[in-house]
Length: 237
Image 1 (spheres, rainbow, N blue to C red):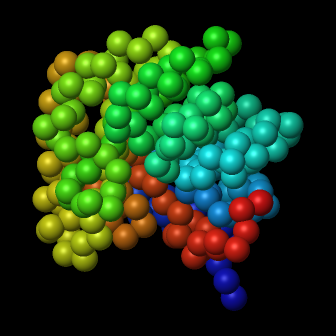
Image 2 (image 1 turned 90 degrees about the horizontal axis):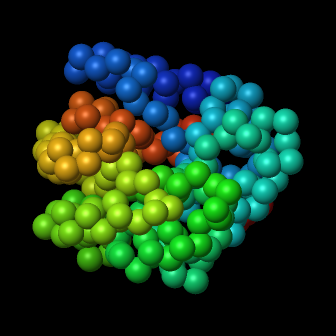
């Protein structure tokens, strides 16, 4: 019998709690972001029934259609939507108008567009700067050496709120190597926080490496497969 989304969520929350306690942190310091890309509305509803309220989407149109769907439902206002995929300039308005967070800021042009396109009646868009911590040519994100300059520009944009950093390290099976990469991110996070004390979010860690990320100080883990099962690219409803 396949486990249910509720059972999966309970198991993931237990893993987060154990990882936090193992390194002397409170489990409440770690937000669980359920990555619902390619999953149907029914799967999100099942996660909501199990108490999940924070969801991440990678594809703009798919995410917007889900946000609009849930806006019409009784608990829609309780949900928090994070855009966690790479963003093209021509899609920036949709993100600015519908999402609460974006994790993938890696250039000034996109940040400027989001700030200009954020509706006046909305709170500032919460943004994370994406770091290409493993220096992979296939990945988005900036090098650590570029962080200070980009953070300074983003912090000045009126309709954005710089909340921290995000990274997707290269897959690594060795926990010690996972931890070493995450430790680099932690040091970068602490350094940028000295410049901008309101920064509070370090988004790193997925299904296979969340324990190492939490040990290194992650405040938000992005979990899809362990909650919803394998991705289904045949549907984007």
